[in-house]
Length: 464
Image 1 (cartoon, rainbow, N blue to C red):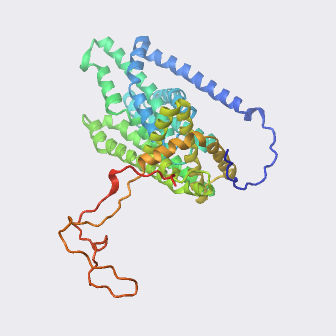
Image 2 (image 1 turned 90 degrees about the vertical axis):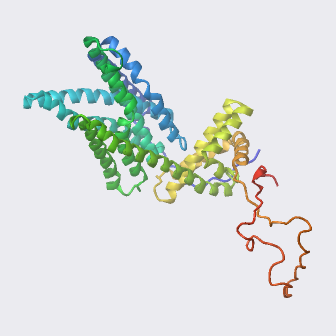
Image 3 (image 1 turned 90 degrees about the horizontal axis):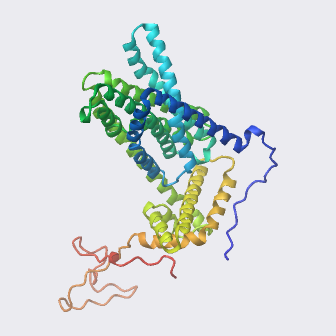
């Protein structure tokens, strides 16, 4: 069995004091689960009280439609360096339970207070929707991003992590809010007797689920981008690490207020804001997220060759791990030939290698923490444990996705169509002719055909 290359040197470890009882992991997890469970029970009771049992079931059935699509989209965006499922589960639960509960209680209290103070219920509803609701809701959703940023810093390393964390939190919040709105609309239809496409339920479903399922994720993603830039900032830039998330939060509140206020801009105000602002903003943020993902892949290809030279990775693995198509081929090959455990090992190998590349990228830019060396050694150990299972699949993916190497060859006319070429002069002798006797890649006319061996399979990069 091959021995692993030597580890990087690391500073001596110091004895650690025993943590207090409130610092233990099981205490934190227990408190968090209890908080979310209580919030879920309270929000369930409040929504059922406002919609009724039948309205709640109808709203629940209709509100669930966009959730799988949004979660799948954010998970796809996070495929380069996927975070643990428990982080996403926490974000969704926080948005659906804790943030929704805070928003319902705070919005109701603020609207009643404004109506009492101004004696204008209509104006209080408008002011609450355009001013109070954006501040309360975006702050409640941003709390989940802040918690992940502070306590799961290892998995929060850039803009994509901020986008995914904020987007999943907002998806959970929109899910609960859609249950409330759709259930209330169904109750209204029950009272008025409206049915079919002319009903309030159909109109609410079209606006909230079909036309703008990305509204809440779009708002909160701005906060996530602010936290993502803060994660990329050096640790010594404390002011920047505080101002960037606050700027993203304020921008999210502003966009949310504009969206809520569009209903008061006239008959076509909503559609004007939707077409002129929301759709372009959604397209711009989508492009930014995909561009950032491509930069992450480029960072993988740029940072991992150092470990290949040191013997930790095979020579072609940096290219393979920097291509999502090659990663997919490697997992499929492992599943086909060795079963699901092998495919899972390959996926873990890819994830650890990506984390290693990002760690080195941050270290070269002076953004790594004090545990850089220990974390590097941990990731290298996890890679070495899975190398026997992962490398055959990655070798196959390298051969399947290696770019063809064009081989330029001179264009030979058919036999007998030209005279024999003059002999090639020896070094030190003058050439017999002023023009080269054979066409070369530099002297060949532009229209001359090149022979590229791209039709043949690429060679095995590891065959001697």
